[in-house]
Length: 249
Image (cartoon, rainbow, N blue to C red):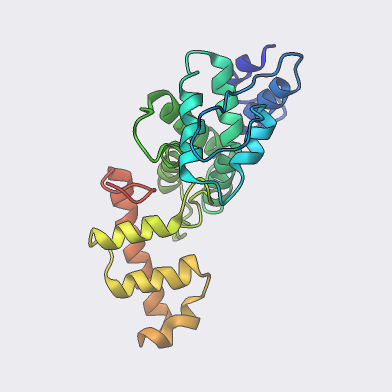
């Protein structure tokens, strides 16, 4: 079966998820007799010239990759969208970010992990097909499509009382930045200055409510409750499209 056709089958008899199938398709593609190659010439701030898909995937995994390079590479990929094999390539190149989203939201997702993988992949594919190359940050937007699909599925099927890992599920650099989401929430007045400081300490710095409670002059239990209320407001705005994962409106 051609690798691009593997995306038509979201699962298999051995319970592999759609992300597993897509990863298999990408592996088949890069190991084939005529592997695809992406033209990297002319992308600003990019010195690399190896456009083989394995090399590009390694390049895209660099946390310090400049945004111009990330957007330039995805702009080239969007230009290949009419060809199905390039959709397979796009999924394979985004796979580390998609796996991060699904794995993190999966901590509180009450359904089957295969279902969550399917939602995340479907969200990314929709974003890839609908993306406008001139809209930046392009790389962040594409990763956010999978994130928002995963968030939506998780909100609908989260375990009772479980906290949605809103910030932890944001793909790591260069795909995303949870600090940008928090800063945007503050600028929009979604969270107050104390809530912003609390979320930064406990969500971005990994401190527990008990560790930071003395700084805020309240019991840890009360601080955790206020944090949950702030995050609930942020989830509603994200799902309504009033704020974006990359920090814009």
